[in-house]
Amino acid sequence: MFVRGRARLSVRESPRLEPRSERGEIVPIVGRDEEPIGAFDSYVVRVVGAGAADRVEPSVQVAAPIEGDPQAPQDGGGEDDRLRVPDLLEGGATFGRFGLRAGYEVLGGDSRPNRAFQTPLATLHAFNGWADKFLTTPAGGIEDLYVGGSASVGPVALQLVWHDYQAEAIDMDYGSEWNASAAMKFGAKKNYEAMLKFADYRADRFATDTTKVWVQVSAAF
Image (cartoon, one colour):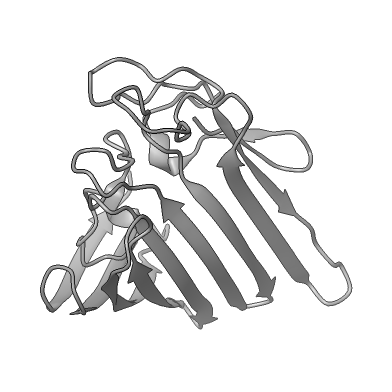
């Protein structure tokens, strides 16, 4: 499981383990036998700092298994192996209207089928590329190395991210992907938003080349 907090000790839910309450209540992930996998298995720690003079705001978050984690792989293998937890290392910084971030995420897999770590309650589209090639973790797991940037140009918010995907448990290059978006809020109360979104996945040894484009308008009341 994940617990995400800031340096000032406020608690935020992890987007991979939805739904949760506003108080950061943990909801157990359901495993392949439809049984909850125990709470407090691992933690996400997010540290955010700010520099008043130059308005630079660095951030770092790390997730890793802790000792005794029932989802961690067991030595010797066997039928009692549990699903593996994800590992995550991400860092970034905001410079006024510009932002940079880079990260490395691992969802564990195995050479045998039906043993990769899954996140059935997550908002899956938000992770591992917008082309949605990894909504289900492949049997060999996934290593997602990504780097991206963001910028605000007038009323338009821009985002660009590049991903490189490889298997975690076996030697296989999955492919790479570019994601880009442009969004703008409008209306007297800025309660409308128009967005143009793009994803381009180039397959190496997993799935097929895919390009997607979205045009959407949303309203908040």
